[in-house]
Image (cartoon, rainbow, N blue to C red; front, side, top):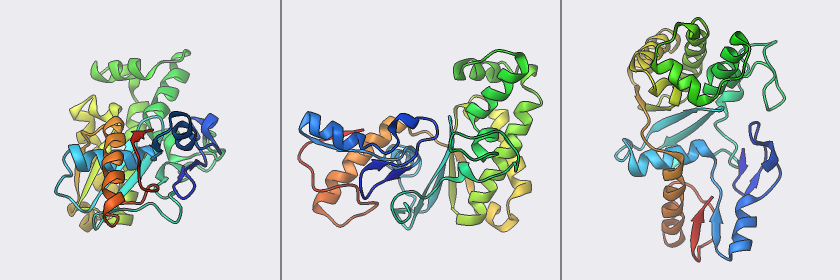
Length: 250
């Protein structure tokens, strides 16, 4: 969670060392240049809009399914950030009342059962050793039967999250950024079918679900572009910081 008003990292369940720190400000002071910090789901939105399949779209949502689950929403051409930049944490909706403890401190959060990392944890518990994200992707590509039924359960929970986004925001397009889902076309089909059963039919029919092509690295570049643009024009997407000198993405 990033407080854009102060440039401060408020809470990172998966990278807690950044909590309550201002990495962009610290980097900028050390380098003597402007530096920006942008929440990764928001970065993916900007990446898809600048470099991916959202160039002509003013209303879409971006679900980031990797270590955790985050959400970015572009509505009317503007990035919805909430009061201080903390909007979009769909991964911390409770879906299991007595589930596994999440990095945020709560139990049973969506990202503990529907993310790439959540599936890797479940498989690690099953086989008795820790597996890496790369090994998990290899198992998915190979269609290894050891992943069932954990993979099926992960897809079901992820569909619940996607349906919630569709029902809440009614986006014309929902991009899914996930190494796990991108590893198998059949997995994406299963996810879409499961979402169809979970979302409100009119909203589901009004929404195109697409795999995202943009990267978070591209999102950092896009944030710089918009920061430089906003220095001389009214904010088109989101205010980041004061007018720039030279700029580096963080």
